[in-house]
Length: 212
View 1 (cartoon, helix red, strand yellow):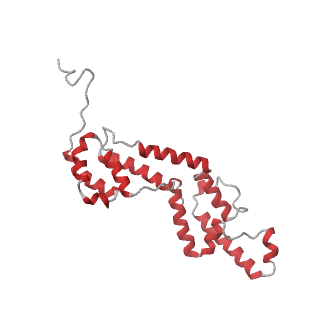
View 2 (cartoon, rainbow, N blue to C red):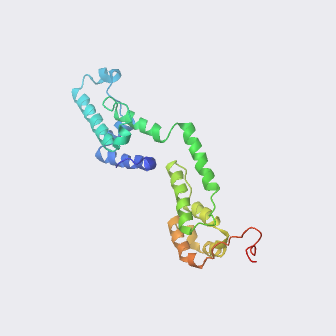
View 3 (cartoon, rainbow, N blue to C red):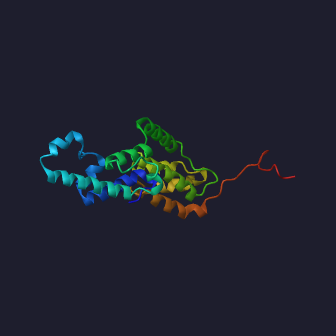
């Protein structure tokens, strides 16, 4: 899996599956739970050459798989990868795309505010509103903020523009609302869109201001 910066968190999940498919120890080399061969533990491993060789082989394979998944423009901005371990590369990526705990906390606060303040805008189509709202949901998922499907669709439905009021009441009365996804709700709303009157824009001076 190739790293796309905007999809870093989902890429981490794909890499976890990819590396564990190769070997659990390869993944451990990347996430740092398999100790590196270093001067500190070399004495412990000195009595078993086979373990040393196997550990080196795992580290090289982990590093190869990880480097192969990083685009050149990102790789070229990192320190000399020849001297970095797979785990050091992994941590460098995490610091770059997630930041420290304070930065992550700020990102969570920001996206939760976006979610709480979401409202369909008068000029938006249901497609526009869905795409904008779905992007907020994706950002929350990437930051580990979980909402139930029911919470998500109610938030979207309850914040449609006023002209959708009757449609909202119809859908809320349907038992399917408790199990459907946001995408399914979006499809249902699209089927009603042609019957929705577009919002009227009132000119300065009232609706008859342009009448002479």
